[in-house]
Amino acid sequence: MFKLVSTRRISWPVFVKVPADGGTVEKVEITAAFEIIETTKCDALLKEADGSKALLRVVLKGWDGISDESGNAIAFGADTLEQVLDVPFVRVAVLNAYFEAASGTAAEKN
Image (tube, rainbow, N blue to C red; front, side):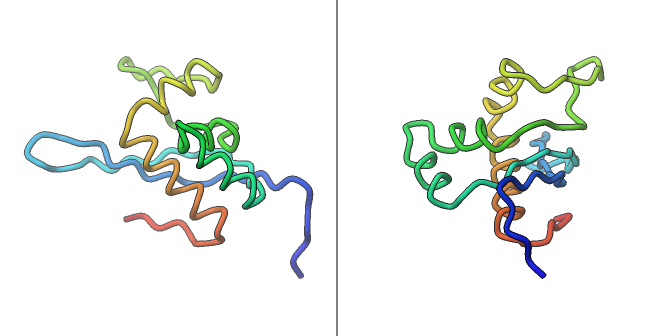
């Protein structure tokens, strides 16, 4: 039975394709904590000037598996969120993962 709940928070895998020399990518997995929001709110956020960032600022509630250059875990927070969202291939991966989760599509390890 489907339960209509006011807030749905989930932990979801995110598969980031990190560009490497020679036109290859290194695939890494992080975990994102998402809050699934209503479609109308999602659509409105995507219409803002910085659409995907605006949406991710609202729905991304935490992460695991992101570290700095020294390998130290980076804590989720307003400043670190902006730094992470400024990395194009990470933002694309997190956005795609959110849409998978929000649409009920199983995560794939592509």
